[in-house]
Length: 561
Image 1 (cartoon, rainbow, N blue to C red):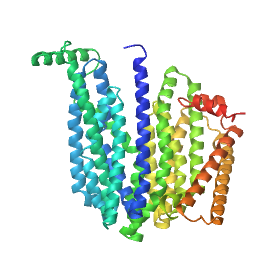
Image 2 (image 1 turned 60 degrees about the horizontal axis):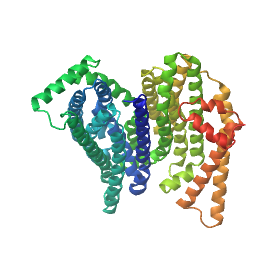
Image 3 (image 1 turned 45 degrees about the vertical axis):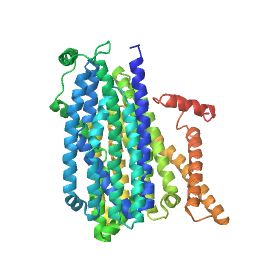
Image 4 (image 1 turned 90 degrees about the vertical axis):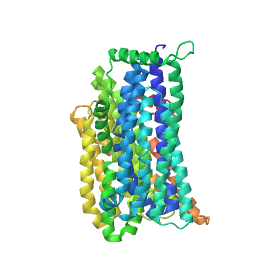
């Protein structure tokens, strides 16, 4: 292998995987809009109650083994033992498939019990259909881990996009059929959740096809160099010899206990991420049911979730870019470059704080036209205004967690999320009975802000960050005031013009208001950030990955003074 080939392959693979993750997450996020449009708020509420539970159960069923498989297969591959890597996959496939089937059966049988915990019996059919996905998704994830261990990211990327695409196609097809046949909200939501199982099955088929092709190539390499297959005993000796040689070269033969010892902490860390959303699942429907009844409470919970897809797009961007900072900071820490660490922490937090706030203010100002454009009416616009501000706290929480992980503090972000989930539960119990879904939105803003504050304070205490009030609050306040006024003025002006032309009041008019308001806000944000000296060209170039390229583009536009 030529020098640099391995590193180039890793970078190419990381790019492929990141691009596929963005596409698949975007598909998964935006599919919620047609779901609400076709099914209504009650279906949307049931779906958003069961889907976080499904995600949590999938995470548990995988046992963190995809990461463990990737690690041990990479070591086996480096040691020259392909047979050892295949043995690890077979062992892990048995573990994940068995765990997925067991949890799937428990979920199906225990659906009434889970519904009792949530406080709403309408979710039982959706829990039944979601249990089907548990039978296939963990096995698919294990196979993804195997190929990632070989630094081949293409199978994972193709299966991710296929999974989400089939999921959305099946979901929409079933929504159209079930709504047309007059099915109830519980049955329609169950059909929507069936899309998850169909997507998982499609993703598994893709992985099996890649595995079949990979196995043929691997079997060919284990055959004689002249193309004649080795006799069976000789083949076994060859595999044994390679495994022994590889083990001597530095990796240990991994058994089930070794895989679980590595994977379970990964699983526990992954469970911390959706904790705040899970708190809503187990508290908000129950608290709403006492005031509205089971059916109406699901409609209210659906309205509450209207703003989440838009917020998730912002946090998805932060998640996708966060992976850039982890290796960059790890490298700086390894070299002992404290000044570079402080610079990168300060710049990344400052700018993701600004971007999160800009998204929050923009969505808050344009909440009503956005709501009408996407969902057909203005119900819950006041709640959406509050929920918009979770984008600011959520973005900073994600980026600050990535910074801490890059600096070696792996457990702290998970513990901070746990503390934020406790705060969220307490505030839900206090505010939802009084203010309904708006109280839940206020609690979400507080919880995400709390997690972000804990991460940032830890970075500050460790000496990696210097907090300046002017950079964090004063100058950003001027920028965001300008952004909000521009977006509101242009959107209102567009509404008046459309009304005068007899075109106002509909979804298309609201969409035009939204797009024009967003455009005005973005222009003011870009110009104001430079003029207020919140970012200089030299600072932008210090951001890892995308910084220099973005600086070049902004420089061509002559935005820097």
